[in-house]
Length: 536
Image (cartoon, rainbow, N blue to C red; front, side, top):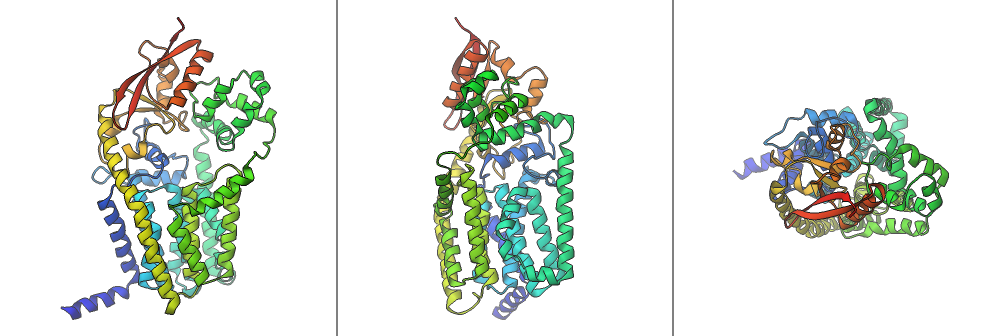
């Protein structure tokens, strides 16, 4: 019996691809069975709604907006399994491919089974418990970079094809993160092999053509007239919300007065209130931004850059970043040190622009810095291997210590929200911004068709997308502003700050007074009935 077991183990070690797949699948399935994975942000929940036509969305569409339309077509083509939708299945499949590819590539490079498994476990646990499409795109790119190094050292057309496919899908899922990770990884790419090997040159050329074609097709897919207003608003949103032009406009009341805007109007736009075309008017917003001129560097921008770097050492990233630093010390390489420098510069620049501490951006970058010494250095035997193995084991324990309580609390609140939504009032409910926890109501493995029948009138970036419930209601003459002035008003989920802005809007724009009463309250949800009536 023992001889047959030993023979089986030796056979599996001779098949690293199969063993890597088996180990990665076991890890991911175990996490899904033990916990209830939920989306890291509501972005993925919204894109699942777009793909499959529920919640905020009237009908399914491949136009995911944040991901390439080709990825939208792919996830829509995946049939549901036990009620779990294609977007979720595609996400889990991507995580499985990432874990498998990274483990396989590291084994091929001779990093050793235990060391490789610990490294992959450290990188894949959080994205499995809290999936996020930007993280997945970045990790696919990291896996592609490892694969290119495997081809440069060991050859094999299969390795090269797999690495290029990983990179291509990383681009489809989130092009900005793909480019960021690739930019930081420039010192880690096998430039000599690219210069000397015709196969690699052809592969990179085909990859470039595929990416350019996907980008062109994606751009063409949004060229219809139904997307005109949505696309016109996006540059304004980036300036006003992401890069704080709204704050600067509020410092120039003369510009606001010239275009008939109040400070509350700007606050509304900054808070995703686009249902009033007189406020969310691309021409007026463009004119005000042009009159404002180029934005000066904000006070505290440099400090924000240092805050972005400091965020690398936040509790969630600490096991990864400390492991990456230790491996850099154990296996020092100038190329890895240069990648560290590029990473710090990129994060500092993001902080200066007002976007520090974006965890979904940081995770793939830190993951790249962690695996780089294992890929490029000699950490395969002796004291260095034992120290690295011990360090990764401690990091995995620390990671579990941080993530397991979060996952358990998330599981509890997911069940609470899923129970509470069944008592919500009928008809479209206005959801302002992130006030309804879509990531908890519709987690990764959600399979309840009844909860998908609830319609949400979203005040968010998709309000004027052709497929949104908000757009359909507006077209049918049941828009939020029309219903707000009826005798019954609208059911709405909003924060007190947002309701105060709506109160001022009701007074300034509708010459009325806002009245709000509690319509439905549970432990996790509060729906209020809001009505803008005439002053008395």
